[in-house]
Length: 455
Image 1 (cartoon, one colour):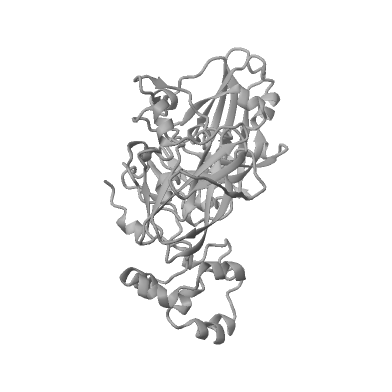
Image 2: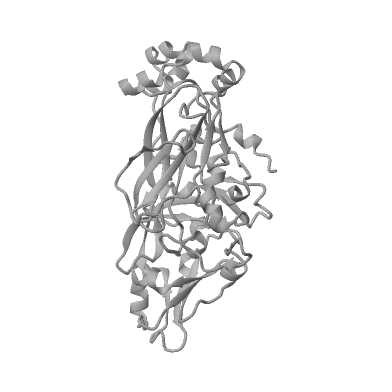
C-alpha cells in the first residue's frame, strides 16, 4: 500500500479551512475541550451570514485583538500590481496543489497529477490545478514550429492541408465549458482499495472553458467527404504519439474542438499547448494533447491506445474496446476523506456531478448509506457535458453517518451503486468506474473512504 500519511497531514479540515497548525494540533490533542471553548455553532454562523471559521481565532483568545487592533496590512503600503507580473495564489494556499500518487508514478515521465477537488469552488478548475495524465512527460512546444496535418484514406479528403497555430487562430473561434475525465478515474476503488481522499479517488477530472475551432470546420476547409467518413484518428506530437479513434458522429455534431485556449488564456504546456483536441463527454485519452495529425477513415484504426490499453475487462474474460463515453457520475467533495468535522451542527455538504451524455438533471444525497435520499440544490447555470456543483445543508448530530451522492442526467441515466456496476462489469475492471462513492463520518468527526457491502 502507498504511504499517504505525509500528504494527509497537510490536508485542510472541513469546512474550517483556515485553522493554523497550532490550532489543528489542539484539536488533535484535546478535541472536545478545545471545541467547548472554541466552537461557534455553525447554525448561528449560517443564520447570521458569518464565516463558520470565525471561531478559529476566538479559540486562542485572539478574536477581540484581531478585530480591534489595526493589523500591519492596514497601516502600510501593499506591493505594486506588477509584482509579480503573472498573478499567483496566496502563500497561505500553498497546500492546495496537484498531487502525484507514488504508486502510479513508475517513472517521472509517466504519471498522474490529481486535482485537489476537496478545496475548489464552483465548476471551473484553475488551469494550474487541472489534472494531468502524461504518457511521455509534458512539453513546452514553440507554437511557431508546431503544425497540424489533416489527411484521409483514399479520396476522403480532396485537399489535405497542414495548418500552423496562427492559421487556426485566424479562424472563427467558439468557447465552451466541458469536463475532461481520465478513463481510469476511481480505478483503485474497483479493487476496494480505500485511498484516503477525494483527490485520489476522483481527482482525475477537471473542467475548463476551452476556446478553439470546431474540427468540423477544418474538415470542411479541406474538402472532406463527410458522408464517406465514419471515423477519425487523432494523434499527438508527444514522444508516445498518443493516438485514438473517434467516431465521426461526434465530429458532425460540431462539439469536437481543436482548442488553443483554456480559461481565458492559452493552454498550459502540461495540458497540450499549443493545440489539443477536446471531445466533450469522452475519456481523457481521446482528447489528444499536442495535436499534430487528423486522419479520416472508414473503419476504427485499432491504435495502440485502444488495443493494448484503455479496454474494459468483462466478467466473461473478453475485453470491451472503443469505450470512450464517460457515464453519469458524482462525488461529495467536502466533507470528504481525510477531512474532519470539528463539532456537531450544520454543515454545507458540497460536491460535483457530470455526465458524458449531457446535462445533469438532479443530484440526490444520502446520509445513511443510501437508505433515504434528499434532493440537493444544483447551482446554475448547468452546462452541457460539464461539471455541475451541488450543495445541501446537513445537521451532524455527532453519530456515525455514511454520506453518498447520486446523479441523474438529462437522458435519465442514474449513477449506479457498486453492487449494480459489478453485476454488469465484474470485479477486475480498471476503467469507467462511475459507482456511488461513500464517505463515513466517524463519531470523532474524522471522514473516511469506505465501501458498504449492500451498495
